[in-house]
Image 1 (cartoon, rainbow, N blue to C red):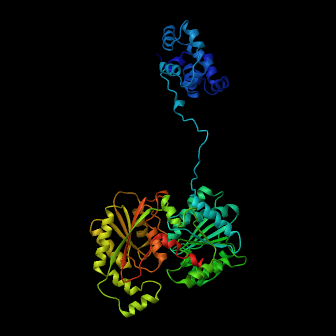
Image 2: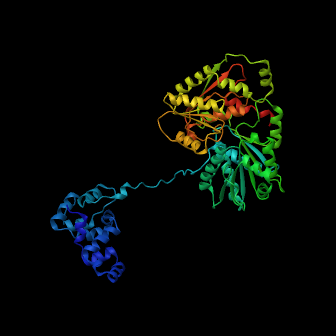
Image 3: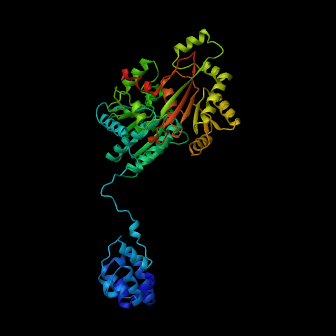
Amino acid sequence: MITFDELISRASDQLLQELVGRKTVRLLAGLDASLTRPERLSEIAIGLRAPADMLLDKKLRSELLMLLRKTEAEMLAQRLGLSGDPYEALASMKVRRSSSRASELFEFFTVSDDSEWRPVPPSHESVAPFHGLFPHQRLAARKVLAQLEQDPHRVVLHMPTGSGKTRTAMSVICHLLNQREPSLVVWLAHSEELCEQAVEEFGRAWAARGIRPVDVQRWWGPHSLRLPVTKDGLIVAGLAKVYASACKSHEEIGLLAGRVNLVVMDEAHQAIAPTYKLILDVLTQAGTPTPLLGLTATPGRSWNDVDEDERLAEFFSRQKVSLEVEGYGNPVRYLIDEGYLAETQFIQLDYTAGSELSVEELEELRESLDIPQSIIESLAADEQRNLLILSQTESMCRRHNRIIVFAATKDHAVVLATVLRARGYWSYAVTGETPTNDRARIIETFRTASDEPRVIVNYGVLTTGFDAPQTSAAVIARPTKSLVLFSQMVGRATRGEKAGGNRVAEIATVVDTRLPGFCNMSQAFRNWEDVW
């Protein structure tokens, strides 16, 4: 046996020039005559074409095998099972790639056929989109687009928490931006987390679906509206920032109102709050009515205030696109069966406080939309109740890696997180008063993968707009009569495997037996159907 390099080093100048190409040789000679020496041409020839390919080329193989010495030719012919004159036999033999003869030939010259490792492209294959939608999301997006294109040009997209409302809405936005150039969309949300989540999701969606560069502008917290206002892209605005601007002057919101092509209201159940309704009216009623898309998992303002819910339905002209799945009376069951939502175990932690409610407290409880603050603060200070919460949380830490505890007050969150940390758990409180940098660091660490159980004790900022799909457990220790609030808290821990979450989830709710109770997600989804 000899190496292929040794074989080709025996080639004549004429053969080497044929292998390299006569035009190439002449050009090399004009630049540097040393490049045309036989040893250099041999190196160039091997670099131009794989040795295996040369040996599979019948004409070239015949010329190369003539370079073998007689004993080498006889040895190769014998190895290949050829008889007669070895040179004639080698010159006339047929060699097919991947055959046993080809393998023997390559082995003789210590050559490997790299092409054998290249997979043959299939005749048919499925190409997955980089930022696609699930079937139920695609259907919802098509229906929303149809509603926005016809009077009254406003609609609520009603999808359960964790089923992809934001992604579906971004698909609608990308479609509209692609259809019309330039085009401006304003996205309104009430918290910094929701605003940043919208910017991140749009970045992913537009990178996959967009057809041109567009502007993305933040207008919340420390961010100001850049002038002149962009004509093409997305402005994500915090409602508090927009309202504060409108109170000072109508200049900024007026500039938007005259050029916006679509307004999106995240958590649309807040749309009829007086401060927010003013903003929406200005943005959508300047000149030609601007299309309005509301997003919500809970298309009502409360659990039992029908008048409030009627006003919300009327504001959106009773136009609502809900998740619809053939064969399922309630789409939440479908989302669980298909792995979009986790199969959730609801645990009820009944607790009866030591003191009874006063007559005044009972009256206030009946008349108020939610649990009065005085009652909430009393519960937050109840040590036996807190021991129940801590015991349940520590129990969950043995089964789950990411847990959220929803505290009753800011101080309650700090106390619970401090005790858990003293007990050896990674645990931090996140409240509306947590400095922005600290909050971002805590949330990022919570999101980062690890086998260590991590607990965030939240009050008021992670209910919506907190995207950590690996969260698989929650303790709801914040009493509320709001089905909206309850659904949002449940949704933080119930992403399914197809949505990057978990197969199963666990929700423990502290049910204070003196107060109104809670329901499950399926009931929540259907609660407002009568007013729409």
